[in-house]
Amino acid sequence: MDYPAKGHVSAMKRTAKELDAVLGNWLEEHLKKKADGDSDFMDVMMSNLPEGAEMSGYSRHVVIKATAMVRCLDVNN
Image (cartoon, rainbow, N blue to C red; front, side, top):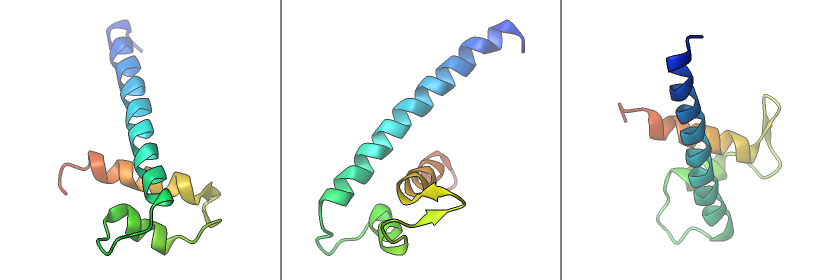
């Protein structure tokens, strides 16, 4: 890897950690509250993945956060 790109890699890792924290907080908020009639993406994901479920060895929490991250980063949505 050439050295000028190294700064970009660090920035991408830092951004990924920040996004993970935001999505984690979003998920935790949804886990603490019951749906009030309006369902959003997190509510749908939580209703489709029962508590304790695993997908390819990953916990429900990780699967939901990863899926939400992909949706947030997909500019075609």
